[in-house]
Image (cartoon, rainbow, N blue to C red):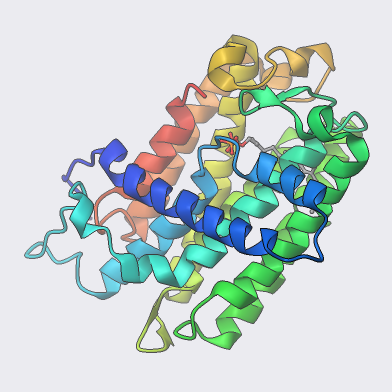
Amino acid sequence: MMTKTHSLDMQAYTKPRRDAIESELESVLSKWENDKRVPMILSESMRYSLMSPGKRMRALLCLAACETVLYIKNGAHSESQDYDLNNFNQFNKTVFEQVKALACSIEMIHAMSLIHDDLPCLDNDDMRRGKATNHVVFGEAMALLAGDALILRAVENIIEGTPESVSKDAVLEVIKELSIAAGAPGMVGGQVFDLLKDEDVKRIHDEKTGALIAFSLWSGARFAMKDGVSVATKEQLDALREFGLVLGLAFQIADDLLDINGSAEVIGKTPGKDVASDKVTWVSIFGEDGARKKLSQLQEQGEALLTDHNLNFAPLPVLFELLRFAITRSH
Ligand code: GRG
């Protein structure tokens, strides 16, 4: 088994990609805002949450998975070829075209879930991404409706914005899997288990957080096309989905720890809410030490998955680094 030795400047990797995602989100929103049928207040409420400063982690994972399988297909795993992704100019705009609508739609679904999660009937939070939550600014009814509108715009955007080079079969399959990941067997179901204070914290995290993260990776690879043909193998797709669940669990356990140790300025939301609302979290069940131990196990498990399926190779160890970021993040 070979180990990748390149080092990756994460800032240099993520900055142009995050900028491209922000600019695509802006252009889609502006287009919709010109539609006279849409009430202005609804557009404002949607824009407020979608464009508030998020990490865009799910969109980046989607793009990274697509880039990874395409570079592997193109032979980037051969030691003779090197891709300097630390160089901005190497950012492959053709790859971005394939997944930009999908990546933005994932951010729409995510933004919707945050709006709904913050509502008084669920988590009842008044701060998100360092700003007042949507319902505090626009009222509960508008927040609910902005979330509803974002879900359907997300689906419309995948259909409308995905280029012809991506097969219709792939588009249909991705929409079906998105409905599952965000729906009753995924985010919605996880939110219900959370609400009922179910003891199975892994299931809560897998469904509430992991499902959309796993979908982001899987779908980015599913949309990787070369000459009209899908390039990701079934093995790669399965491995990426599994890696997504590992990363999602790590991301959520890191979130549970930040709720205890983070400050409002850094995490952009109210700390201490989990304890105050007697929430079932990894920390509440296994303690802080148990949470940290689980994080290091997940890092090993995630890295082994990538290595075993040669997904750590290309173009640089970006999936490795994104996992590391999910674990060590401070916000
Ligand atoms: C109606 C389809 C539908 C779903 C609603 C409300 C709900 C069901 C689910 C809640 C899902 C949820 C809010 C999970 C928490 C996931 C999480 C760790 C969010 C924080 O993600 P970050 O840190 O946020 O990536 P930023 O702000 O950086 O985007």
